[in-house]
Length: 232
Ligand code: CA
Image 1 (cartoon, helix red, strand yellow):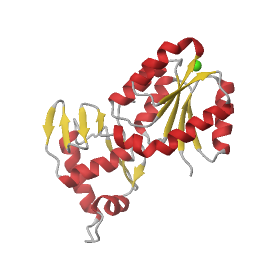
Image 2: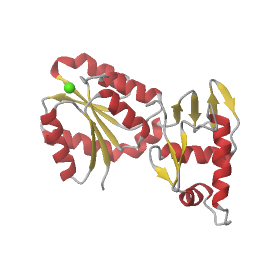
Image 3: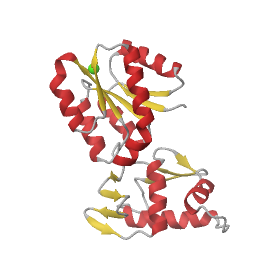
Image 4: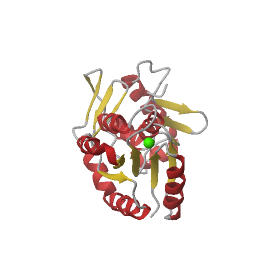
């Protein structure tokens, strides 16, 4: 089964080795060479696994890990540490990493860890991704509660499902037909205009300036796209 893996690593030779090896196993690999870029990618897109180096330019691996978990991003994280950073790996696990590997390591050992985490991936994500945060909005999926700036926002069950679908598919363009199929689900022939009305309602409740959305974006002629928005 093919998975999408985000590799956050700044060592060129290691990037080449790992990309080759992971692709040879049939995985799709996206690479970020600094912590800030890695953090943004992991916030805005859905990955099955993050391989995260600890010592990175712009934002270190520990900060990336902590900030992702604070945002409610539940993607499993395999942290790579240098031998001198033993203390940090303990901190890394406390901050929400799922496993770590000390450099230098055998590629075979890394692949074994990767496969183990990918097998557990859906369970891990389910356990951690109960909340998600963007801007000053916090969504608690389990408690079905949404707050903006700490104040509870009333979303209908449908609006919450719509928001959840956007968050789960963040960074991707989603057509109105797909939303009707996946969020409305039944074939009561709702028209695509229905989608626009509900998207507008969610914007009205959650965007600072509903007419100029920063998160729930219109992609002309194609549909909508959700972004967490902190990259601006
Ligand atoms: Ca490094």
